[in-house]
Length: 343
Ligand code: NAD
Ligand code: WQD
Image (tube, rainbow, N blue to C red; front, side):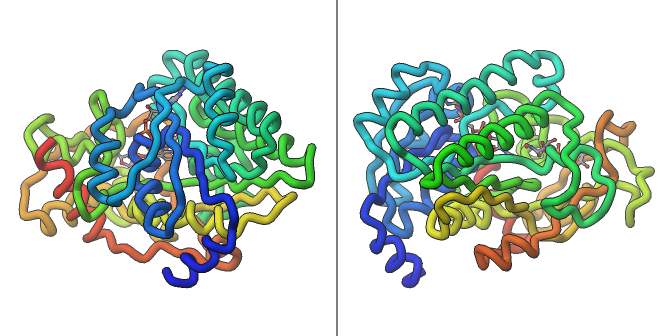
């Protein structure tokens, strides 16, 4: 950490603008940025978060930050924010992320995620802000043809949400090519779970959770009745689906390294996962044992579009950013419950 602190102070402008900063991953990344001394500006329309996150961040970090309650689709308001703040770099989390909703309402996703990103890049160009870190997803690989998945794997989204991530990656890549001062880092997250050790921030979706871990939490705390395991007849060790679950604080720290190791003129892409596959049953069992709670479940049919197994090849990010995930599955399960039991 000391080395990071020193490197950070070698940079003159410490201000990072975070779109979607009050969301699940954004809020954890703000903690990681504050830890090494960055100043943070948040842009969020609070469509999937609340102002209380801001208060909790100030308790955790003992530092303040500015919130601009702005929709990134509002070009003029966003431009004014950039003119006023003159950030050195942007981490772009703001986006809609529910796969099923994206199938039902694709235009909402194309507009929010793609038009939002275009606005942001356009404005960054106007104010000479040249470095962007973008939240992409393992969803860009669709149903993968080889395991583990490395960054060269063909991109093949199978739903509108995934398509927005592929388009945004491409748009950012083209934006960088225009000017040698520009740079981007595309981070493809696998399955982030868990919470910060303060348990003041965590995964707290505004509606019924779709992802497995928040669903497990909602069953354990009595909000939902039981987990439906989507298929136990996959060709995996126990028949249930395998994913690469990663602690959200490990993920957050990767963003700090991406900013610190920025290289002008370059577009980089990294997978962020642990490189290890965990089954649905393993996750439920670990959660039960670590937290001494019962999680009722039943086996139902496969969910359409699900792959049997998805886990990352994480060599590239280890080699280039010297980052690897080091928190355990037990820590992920414990922190998810410590945050979620009172929701
Ligand atoms: P989240 O919904 O918790 O956070 C997103 C934040 O963006 C919210 O606070 C929301 O209010 C804000 N937002 C959305 N649209 C906006 C707009 N038009 N203008 C301003 N603010 C807006 O989601 P998250 O889990 O923190 O995900 C962050 C990013 O990471 C997203 O882009 C998501 O697609 C991506 N991602 C998430 C996961 C995951 O499993 N959580 C996995 C891979 C990629
Ligand atoms: C994990 C495993 C399910 C819920 C999704 C998005 C992806 C990314 C991460 C944003 C699978 C099983 C799940 C349940 C279950 N998000 N499951 N019962 O599908 O890997 O990826 O979130 O970018 O884009 O597609 O994550 O948490 O939904 O599922 O059995 O109620 O749990 O079948 O094997 P997934 P998930």
